[in-house]
Image 1 (spheres, rainbow, N blue to C red):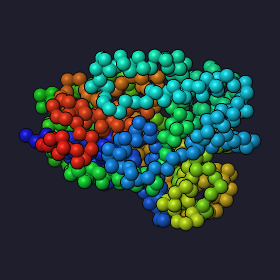
Image 2 (cartoon, helix red, strand yellow):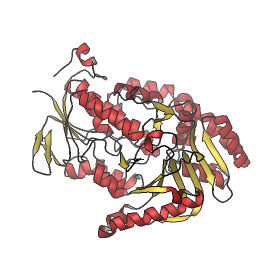
Image 3 (cartoon, one colour):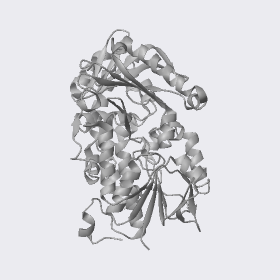
Image 4 (cartoon, rainbow, N blue to C red):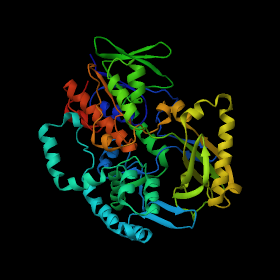
Length: 499
């Protein structure tokens, strides 16, 4: 019988798994809840403006090969980022630019907090060492031998001191090792304070080496290139259909049942849905439920956000493309109060707005329950939040309110409705000491022919890890099915594979 892989979810992980599975000779069918593929990697139009709902920065380096294998680059040019973010204190206008020039960054940090000069130097000295911790691309942990793991530990032996010191969450490390409150705030605003400090160092290292970029044309062009790759490889798609149940016979997955009652049969199933929904709903808690509940109790998910975006009739060419303004007048959005504004200004890419215009977007923490209970007042609350945020923005980017042509507000329910993001947590688990160094298995105990991929088995989530997850899950399938893994379209015939 032809090996048929049914993939639940047409986001990046599902599309990646589909591309690699097709290249390796499997028949594939992606079942997507939404009316279009892409999942949370999405963008949409509002009049002449494009609202980007996903990629703020893209990690390259070791991941660049994945983009090539999936046919995304060179089709989509990547523009190297010279600046990660500009931090500004609204109280006195103090500004710190986090750029590729780490020597300049270190000087700026020491000027900000001379009392923390020694710790700043330790942080910068560790950046190059931490880059050696880049995730393995070639094979998943499940296929690594004991010899592979011992070799990896041996290679990291000189970095153990750095790992031990900086594996703590950014919030805890900064509280214990930094004297300057201003420096603490800078770091805990840049990245989630629950994330390990190693993540901060990785970002700085990738930035220095030119491994952080933005795709020209934004999320839409990046997503569409991946969709084209999947379709060109002959992958099948079922859109606007929600999987209600994974069908199991004799402890082996054999297909899925959709909400309309129809059944899709296959001998392999990959779920890229959120881990809680996969384990507790699609499989009714029959496999791996205890471990999943434990993880839900002890690991923290990314906090839901509101994306408030504005198409404006001004280029805002003098505003940094990524701007973090701290100590702003407190702003409450959906039951959560913020004292900082993170803004993206799409003034480096002409594809987002008409000439002389741009899109300004801010991301604000919020509460899922608040939005879930708004019911009939949901649209009115979105309008209220859009106006409230704009009033705040106008204080710090004067004149923007008068230039607004379009307002768009996306809430946690937007992520749920379009991509089934569990409680609006668009990237799954926040990376922490356990999540970063632990491992979330892509299989469940006692269930054959079933696999999981995506941001919920890759703590920290994000575009590159979602794509890598699709590669790794396909490698596991190939190993279980006794097939050669093929990484690129066109290589299958040369490898002698096929179905």
